[in-house]
Length: 187
Image 1 (cartoon, rainbow, N blue to C red):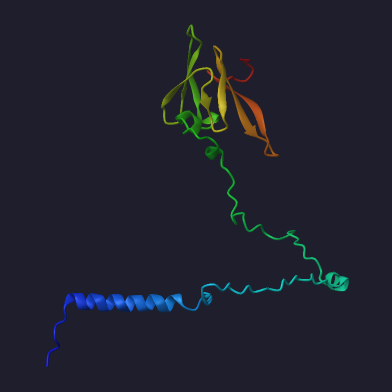
Image 2 (spheres, rainbow, N blue to C red):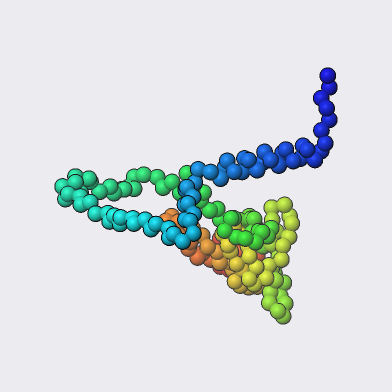
């Protein structure tokens, strides 16, 4: 025998009744409601005793028995430092990309020509592959942060920072000669 079809309003009404009953059951369990006094009678006032908490005193012996904890970090690794310390490389110190002249050691370059000009002399150096580069006063050159300081008629003077044995940067003057000085001939 098939079930009779119910009207939608009956189903919705039944669901609402169930939801209302669940809400009422959920609201219970709180503080009991105070009874409403009858007309003309005042509600009885309840007196509550005020209890003050007495501070408990700890004996001095108990305080002395507990040793005060101190942390000594000597010889222990710092948990907030990375295990691997990366040392900065010389190339990483510069934020500007290296020019081709800064990728060579000064000893790898050969002074080919010096051109006299009104604005200052210009020098031409050549790398081992035969590629030429022009130098002016202030041009960066070499791997040790070298700068061209003077361009004379027969040589180029370069000042660079060279690390010494202690690791300190020491200013060093390097000369590039147009013609290699032969023995016995002063430049």
